[in-house]
Length: 308
Image (cartoon, rainbow, N blue to C red):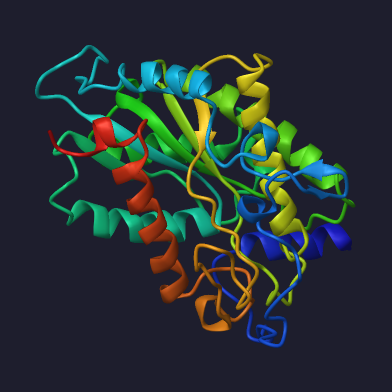
């Protein structure tokens, strides 16, 4: 019975049920954003997005990322460099991911700074959590192929991915929850490397605030703790335990509700839909703005994202 209920929650991702209502009284958890936690710890695990409690990659790892970014260039359908070719930036993930990326795509496509060579394709899909898409035979991947075809691009032109995932119905205590998501994300990055031969960069993000959530889909503290999963995946790539494309943080999206974080990001109850889990239009705009700022300012992204 529990599995049936959970499956219903997963399949309903992206639309709140009639009985769902966000709990707007949960405006803060008291948790500290990883970017503000820095070298301090959460249950013995250091904060920051990168090792050492830092929020930026080391000079050495950034240098590696810049080298991978230098290999991102317009390519034809066969994957060969072409002056008239395309750079595909593909989203991979769940319902929140597709809702946020589709909003980002709309504003980015209208931004004159974006290179004409960059094509944004939303491969993320509702109801497709990390446990599902870690399977290379999952229907999710066929749907990604169809979306690439609909955009008139090929797998050989996919060179950058934004990956944002979580585990639906997570209930394990920390750090077990983050550890399982870490393994899932690493399996997914392996699938990406095999499916897309010219993939150079994968940017990962963790969940937005879920303190207002009233379902078991992915409430706090699991949304917050997903940040550690991403941190550990990136650290595994830094330390050579993973191969393939360069892995780095995309925008970090979590902030402690109305208490927010030091850079001013806050999540209001109005930024979430009725279930308190999926972003409302204003929440999608917040994530889209963070994505646009990231791709136009990050040193590994702006060199290919911005028109020269």
